[in-house]
Image 1: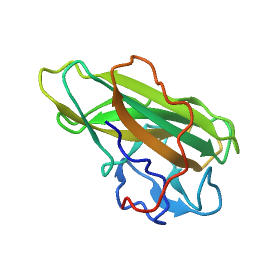
Image 2: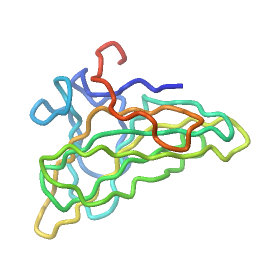
Image 3: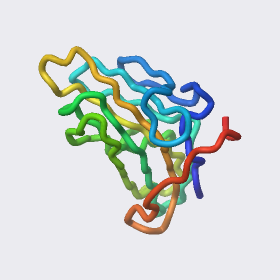
Amino acid sequence: GWGQNRGFEQANTNSWTRDGTGTTAASTTVKRTGSYAGSHTVNSTSNQRWRNSGNSVVVAPSGRVHVILWVNPDSSGNQSGAGIFDETSSTASGGTGGVRTASTWTRLTHTLQNTATTNRTYTPYVNSRKNVTGDSQFNNYVDDVVIYSSSSSTTDVTDPVAPYRDWE
């Protein structure tokens, strides 16, 4: 199954939940597709998770869930990663991010297999962490977030389509 492409085209972040510090907003300044992207302002050197709690897929035992999202930090050297949150057990997978380049949209992915004996509900998240000495904070822009289930062990969708407006 597919979770809908949760761009930020309703000009808000109502379906997103912050697990950590920082601020969030919809941005018209920096976006990959459509009119808006999400902006996660981070001022911490610890991992700051921002999850799309309104965008979930249910995965059967042994099934796989995939997340694709795009990030664009406003300063180089800070870290971003894609992850999957298990809403059933309240555990996170992935999210460990590499150093990202400023003003460049980077496609991030994460895949997880449901090893439980029951169905699980999963949501996507982006993890951000300030990693540059001297930066008091940075903005991590996020857009075109997709979550879906598949029997494939690899992410098999290459480029999410532009978001549409009838989902929130």
